[in-house]
Image (cartoon, rainbow, N blue to C red; front, side, top):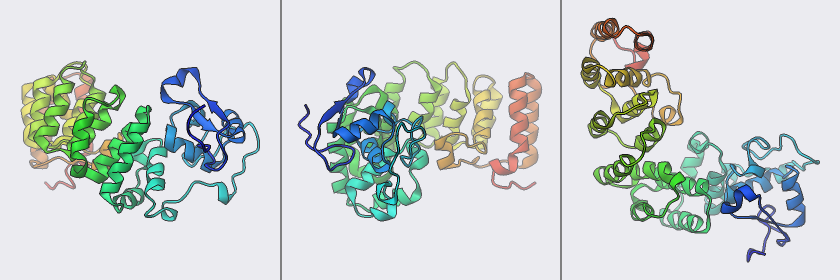
Amino acid sequence: MSSISTCQACRQSPVEREVLLETEKDFGAYQLCFGCAMRLERFSLRPVEWFNLAAIHSPQRYHLHDDFYDEDGKAYQPGEYVDDTPASSIPLVSDILGNQERLVDMVMSRWFYSHYYTPELASAVDQLDHGGLLECIKRRVAASRNPVIVSSAYRIAEVNLKNAAADWIRAQESKHHPHCFLAWACACGTCLPFEEGFERVTSILVRQPRNPDRLLTALSSFHGDRVLDWIEGNIGQPITETWGQAAALAGFSWQRAEKWLAGGRPLSLVALDALNACWNYNTGRLKEAKPKLINPASRDEIISTLRDYAAKDAWPRPERAVQKVIDHLDVIVNNLGK
């Protein structure tokens, strides 16, 4: 039995059972009293019990998964009656202002961290003492084998601690689980000086298979021509829209778009995707940043350049992409005039 003495779910009764699926043996067992263990296995946890467990084990563990609970811990398909009275509900941000441990619990319990990291929660965490907050997430990372929990700690460093977490983020480069790389890379973008963070992240990216989805996330906290130059020098198959999304997040100008369109594939396709990422915010990072085209030319010049390109590269993909850009041009450049 673990040295943990109090049930991780109710945080009141003594630990009487350990619950662990064989497929999750690397992440550590739930330490529970008999009642909470039964409710866990029957997918009938009270909301606050789900919240307490998700804060330690992440909501992506099987027994806590969103197949069975919503983001507030309400059971979708309980195997027994669930006490969901107000007393058993998860806390509201307003209820735990200034409470470091519970605010960090709330961050750790969110399923899609970017989506649920609301301005209210981000502000509440930001008001905490940054030195104490850093020590709190260090303790949680040291105690956890769960990459989701570790990634959430990196997200706190990225959003709230910034350069206050610089030394810790540097030290984590050789320690973190491979599944935490993307969250660590994003933290590098805000916690470290640009050149240092960019070099650390890209030196790892160039050693990995070209995965555009990883590229988008890993580079999403870095901005400027240095990022666009790197994309030019490292572009590779497959040419999916995520290359363009990374370019848009970096800060995409019409001058860069003209250059890439004139040079042809593959960068011309990336340019079109980058322009469309300036209105179609279909990822969490794009929704947060809401990028727009920088230094646009006149409407007539942009449309003429795009149509000239579409005539030369007369295939369905570029033709569709060009038409979408033209259809959304006002949004892409914030109500461009004639």
